[in-house]
Length: 215
Image (tube, rainbow, N blue to C red):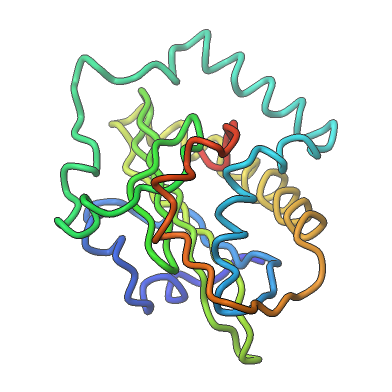
């Protein structure tokens, strides 16, 4: 389910300190009911690649077309010529020195806390951030929330984001949330605290790559 922008900006996320100049492109509530300590499970699910293995034929065909066109036009080459700064350069000291979280190619993890995970994508068309948060809902439980923040690269970036917007909102994200719901299962209640931020650095190398989640 798409959410209003206020559901992102009203929360004291650390990403607000880092992603100045980025616009909120999408915000979705994730069907991941759980307890206060289930954030670790959500991060691992998204980074594992499990969601990509369950894609529908329509979504697979759409992504195949996207990557083919991107290869032909060079959209996905690293933007080395302009050497745009990574958001890692903006991280406060505590986030920079803390765990980055699991790697999730083509994204690069930026930081991980007890209820936030941010990962960055830089290519020829834009700089983007996938931000996953863990929030308390109206019923007293918890669920995930995914924000996609972008900074387009000039007119080409604006045109690209406008072109793919209806595909993302009508096909890609609704299908993704359905796959998350199937993989997640019913609501859970956590027992002993499981704080991924305390041990992610030592375990990140065990997480399988994930192809994509945004842009």
